[in-house]
Image 1 (cartoon, rainbow, N blue to C red):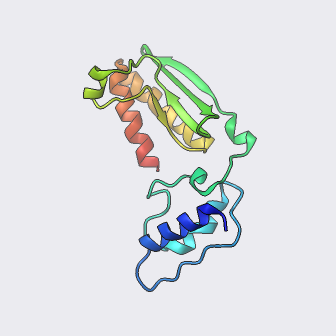
Image 2 (image 1 turned 60 degrees about the vertical axis):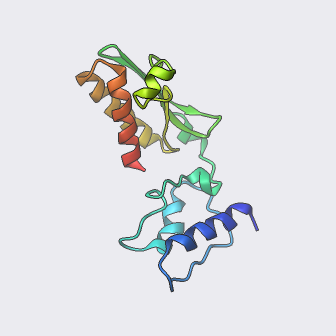
Length: 157
C-alpha cells in the first residue's frame, strides 16, 4: 500500500463525522482535475474540502502535466516588480517580489520571504498575478503589495 494512502486515510477519518464510512480507492488519481471526483464524495455538502484544509495535489502524489508548468509572467507596476513562475524544486507556482529584502526588519512586519508559494494550477497563478498588479497600481510600496497578495492566495486555497 502506498504511504500516501495511509496518511490520507488517517487524515480523512479524522475530519469526517462519526458513523460515516471512509473508503479510499485502490489507485491514486493521476490528473489534477480528478481530485474533486476522487475526494468530494467523502466530504459532502457543508463539510470542508481538501483545499479548505490546505491540501494540494502534490500532497496526494499527483504530478502536474508539462503544459500546466508553462505559465510565466513578469511586470513592473508603479515601481513594484512582480514575477510569477513555475518552481521545479517544489513543483508548484510561486509569485516573487525581488525588491523585498529578507531580514529582521521585515520579519517584524510579518514578511519572512520574497516568495509566496501557490499551487499547481496555471489559472490560479494568472489570477494571483493580475491581483498583485491591481494592488501595485494602488500601492507603490512592495511591502504593502506582498501581504495583500499573500492573503489573496490563502483565500484561494
